[in-house]
Length: 59
Ligand SMILES: [Zn+2]
Image (cartoon, rainbow, N blue to C red; front, side, top):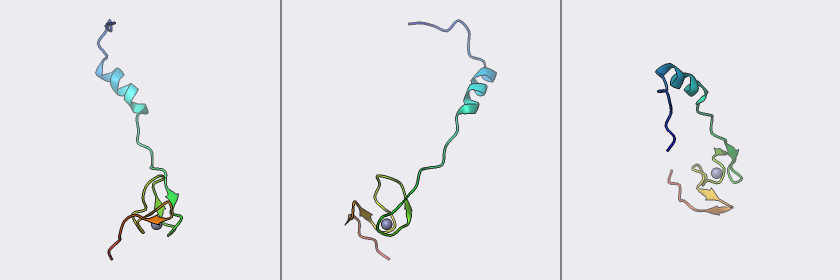
């Protein structure tokens, strides 16, 4: 196995990690109720996915 010649310093490690950041999740509109939802996921507002009710929403 190849071994690094020098230890990665705290500074170098931290500078590399400045590019790591979280991005806002992609949201799509539910085709049934119009609420924002995650794509390819069941709508948590109305419980529909692919035009069918999957989950009973109790209110
Ligand atoms: Zn919905």
